[in-house]
Image 1: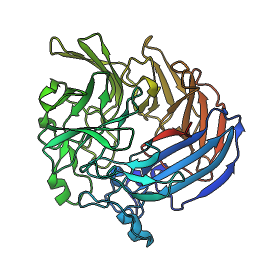
Image 2: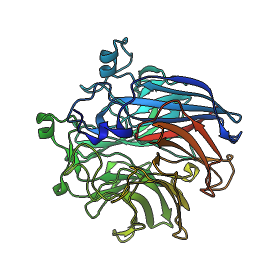
Image 3: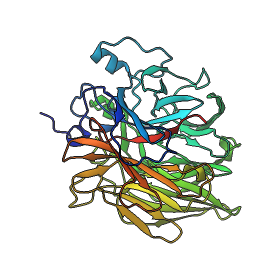
Length: 445
């Protein structure tokens, strides 16, 4: 009998790979939306108890839009070793890193004309076709030495990807930059003891911002039978570091902060020459009492301001509602942004796991909530600008909404400037389980 909440309801895996074409559109899809909305998350092919939500096999979902039509929906397993064995499918080519199944379940991106499913902590990127079939494991044409990340940041001014990578055998983190040709052009090893889990980073015009926080590798957890060996260890300490984007490990400036964990920054930017501001979702702790998923930690939007001249850091809570999966107009990454979009986490008394979306106005402190209705839960909001030169917030929010009333999901398109009734809705032939991340990948110009 299944006991894990992460194998029940809309956390439970779906069994079939589907292809549906010429989907129904309710309302009118903006004709400017030409591309693919991609999402990925854990979808265990043969779940075993105790099950950890972070370790399920990856399944990628995609919805293809073109000139006001919804051309297709597809969902496909990312073909790791466990999936291949369970399904009897042929081997996937490409290099291997580490001893695991090379599960990629956390994010899906487009870069250098290719589509990649990506993960952290040792796994390699997995290249997919434009229709989401697995092609091969990738080390970016031999330029990636070991692990990649679940969260590269694309510099909107250069198109390059900035990332922090880690692996349990290393005594360091790596700050890497992937060029527009799809190969690493820079790698800096930064000594960091204790094996911290580093899920994401932030960038500004001059710096990359590093997280060395007390969720760390613990081999005793593996020995006890867990598939996820990262545990809350407050004695590790909490600090955040700034490395110049063209600097070396010796140039990192570390700032001690109050104990916390950060999965996802919203953004970071510089104020003059002597301040860096970080807005991120702050967890009190993770994988402490519950080591199989995110059920603790009270995640709230928080701002850290780093004083480069004085060496101090100020922390300020911006809201008391529980949130995660912060997104923004990514043309503003590394620069000051006014708006942010997040998924609200269930608090006491709320039935839905993700009851609504929130939009923050960081300039005025105001916020707007979009409630999808009873029994309906929106996933991570993805902002798509109306055009390359449109203003911040001038565009659409795309989100996949799970409807418990029908046990199906649908694509919902909202006007980012006014989160009212949807502009368009595309019913899907199945449900998309609660997962992690996704992105809009526009068609080539």
